[in-house]
Image (cartoon, rainbow, N blue to C red):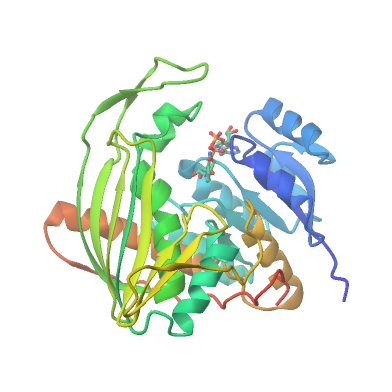
Length: 366
Ligand SMILES: NC(=O)c1ccc[n+]([C@@H]2O[C@H](COP(=O)([O-])OP(=O)(O)OC[C@H]3O[C@@H](n4cnc5c(N)ncnc54)[C@H](O)[C@@H]3O)[C@@H](O)[C@H]2O)c1
């Protein structure tokens, strides 16, 4: 069955927009008709580079009745404002992560969408990649037995070393937890289900930093968001995990996700990527072995979640990278910082369903 493509606009034509626009052109279901940004030069240059018919202001995009979906790639501080404006204009929205900065703004997006019968989707969509879908299948099939826990960490010297305009990554709504945590939390939630309570400890190791590359090199950044965050996550289904995220260490990039169960240990690929490797150690073995990936989308497939949402609109099924899960992730991240501030466990009020797994191979329209 040929489905009518969903007319889509990208708002926010910065760093990450290139891979979205490159990949969006490969999906029959997405018809990207406009690029928009506060900075018209950026919108024009991305539209030209990726053969998008027009560059526009966000207001022009909202006023176009043909556009059904907004892919919102603005900075975190603008996610809720742009997302809400899109919904109020009658369009579904797929936000980059995090869904919003505050819980209240995240809730508003979900309520507005529900009121209007529209969809909210949210990155990351890496959990739909071949690496993490293979892990999900293994966990669901009992390859590690009863899940007991997980250790996940991501520690780097910080995006001030590579991002051309990294200031926003040290402000409220960012830092390593809000910037990188969604990859780790979404991966864990897609395998273990929702989280019921958390504890956390957080600090700012360096209150002032400077940009290390690009035209802004040397300019100072005043750090607002905690940059070293350690947490314990209790899942509703039983396992207990630790998650450490940091922008404060000497390592360029040190990361790991390992799931431990009664019958095996699963080494999960980098949840900020779509591919492998996946390694499984079964009980009684001394060494693990690599597992062949059973699912597709192993290359950088950013836009996969938005394409899944577009298919879901046309076929009237739930979309996988959804607002409910993104809100739970947002709530968990706030709760970790609340716990650090108050010195106690935080029970979560939010929850979510595990999104349905993708079929093996390379199929999305199910
Ligand atoms: N850079 C990466 O590698 C990367 C990777 C994954 C996810 N992300 C996420 O993608 C988002 C964007 O990151 P980026 O690195 O591309 O940032 P960026 O600063 O390079 O680009 C953001 C763009 O949004 C525009 N913008 C800001 N507010 C706007 C508004 N209200 N209306 C319209 N346009 C607006 C800016 O002018 C800018 O062009 C962030 O949420 C980030 O967490 C980035």
